[in-house]
Amino acid sequence: MSSDRDKPTAESPRFEVGTPQHLRWLYQITKTIIVLNIFDAFFTLFWVGTGFAEEANALLRDLVNNNPIVFVLVKAALVSLGSFLLWRYRRHPLAVVGLFTVFLVYYFILLYHLRFSNLFVRYLTDG
Image 1: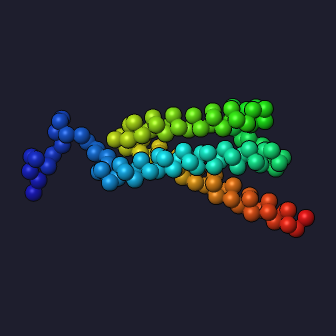
Image 2: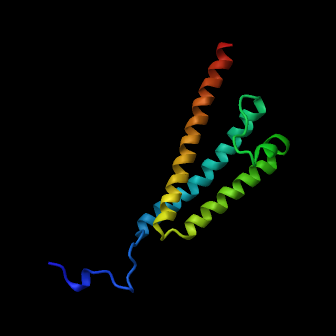
């Protein structure tokens, strides 16, 4: 049987996101997004520099070809600002989903870079 204290009130939030331990994990995930982004930037510079790939992001394509340092700075700034914004709203479920989604995207991008690196090494050693 349900009592009145089990019912949501106007003062209690509908969803409560995060215990202190959850928020520590989420903070680490946010920092990992930034690190993965930097790895992506340097892998991208390498692949574009060797001619094995092109930058997929049309907004950053000219920078990666003409000014690699600015490319890394702009890419780092954009992802850091986006991550900070999601972290700022970490008590909202959609922000948490956003952080996990961005993390997974960058994780799979890193796996793609590593697979491409393996193929590149094989190309160099077999050729």
